Image (cartoon, rainbow, N blue to C red):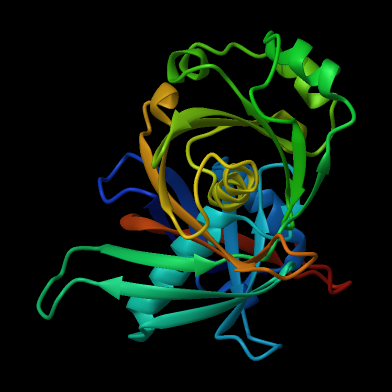
Length: 304
C-alpha cells in the first residue's frame, strides 16, 4: 500500500524585510513528523543555505531545532535561528522565543507589526553563544586561496558552534571584487571564511564556506557576532557599539545584519571580557508549501 504524507514548510527571507532579498531559509514547523533519515535529503532537495526542522523542547526552551545545509548538520547558525524564531513568534503569538540548538539555548527577542498589521515581516535580536578564538595557523594557505597579500587585523578563528576565520581587506571594493579559489578554500575543512572591510558602524562582509557545501552565503548571522567581537577586541569599535553589516550584494541578495558585543570591564586581569553578543535583523515570509513523501508498506514492514 502506498500512502502520501504531507510535510509543510515555510520559506522566509532573513536579514531583510524585502521579499527575494536576504538569505532564504526553509522551516518545517512540524519537524517531529519528518523521519530523521529524510532531513538531510530534504535540505539537499531545497538546496538553500540552511533548512530547519522544529522539534519538541527538551531543555526548557520553546522548541528544539535541527539545522542542515545541503551537505551537513550544524549545531548553530544565525539566520536559521532568527528566521525560525520570527516564524514561531508569529504562529504562536509570542514576544520572545528561546530555541534549543546544538550549541545551547538561544533566546530571541521579537518585534512584530502593530495591531492590524498583516505584513509577514518580523524583527528579532538573538543573544548568541559566546565564541572562543585563537590565531589561525594556516594563514598563508588561506591568503593564497583568497589571492590577497595580507589582513589588516590578525587572522583569527572564532568558534560559536560553527567556526569562522576573519580576514580584513583594505576597503569595501576589495571585498566586492574577491574571486577566491573555491577548491583551495574547501581544502581548509568545514570552516567559513569571512572577508570584511569598513569603519565605525558600517561594515561590508562576504562569507565563503565550500567545505560545508555553501560556496558563498548571502547573510551569515552566526558570523556577525564574532565579527563584532573581533572588531572590539582589536579596537576598531567600542564595546557596546552597534554595527551594521551589509552582505549578499554580489549574489543579488542584499542583506542587513546588526551586531553588538558587551563586555565586563576590569575582570580577567584588568582587561575586557566578552559578556554578551547580540545579532539582529528582519525576516519576511515569502512562500508556504509541502512535501509529499510516499510511504510504502509491504509484507516485511519496510517503509521508505
